[in-house]
Length: 354
Image (cartoon, rainbow, N blue to C red; front, side, top):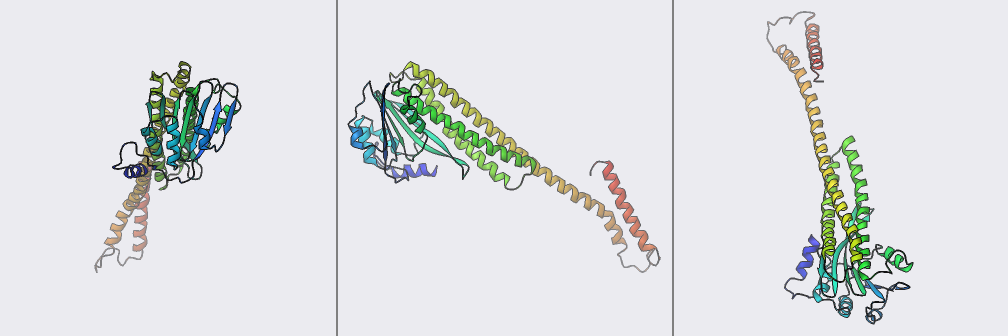
């Protein structure tokens, strides 16, 4: 949230369409180029911008340009201008905290999604904004930080796996959205392992450290739901779209992605409910522990009340007091006190207070 507000503050007062990079990555932008059709595929890593600007979308060849690093505003502006992308879209691409959305234009469709990856060291997920633009014969993708998420798509293109080469640009856009959604389940699987660990700890031996762990997991579920829920709306909008850029055959595959987004949301909700139940169990366990401690202290105090009473009676400094000069007075009093304590313990035991 703070990064998002910081980015908005940088753009305050500027005209609509002003190109301002709001991220923190200063690495040089890299272009990965793929040009393919049903029979062949040419891929170039770290391609030259001039080479990309010479390419024109055709029905025979599909152009896919993947941009990593958004700090080079001029490069992104030139690339989008070549493919006749509206300046407002370029502005949204440079805003690394842009909300997820789907916008339809006459010649292309613009998508903004959050791609997720898992940080094993910090045991949390990292969201990377991913922008996808697809039109007749071309697909443009933009990410601020390098990820390996789309490497599988590039491999499928290279080795002619699946239907990527046989279909148009809308199918490639579907494949990109599909792999982003599939990654959600990898994140959910890691979250499930962490939830199970904390659940075992809460049930068997809850400590003060359990509460912060539960809180962090709940925060992750809130953040994860914020990422996944818009993806469902984006896919639903693509399904309902009347755009000629989306073929009927691709719509069938989009339905499958839509089902996956619903499944991911339902899983997140179930995790959230599970964490709520775990928090209730944690609080109940702490309350029970406190009750047990208070119970023991109350029993001890109850046992010592009559004993203290007798001791206080014989602690008064009167000259004439019964048993004061008796030889067996002291053992008798101690014996009476012991009998009273034992009798009270037996009584508590029969009442099942112990």
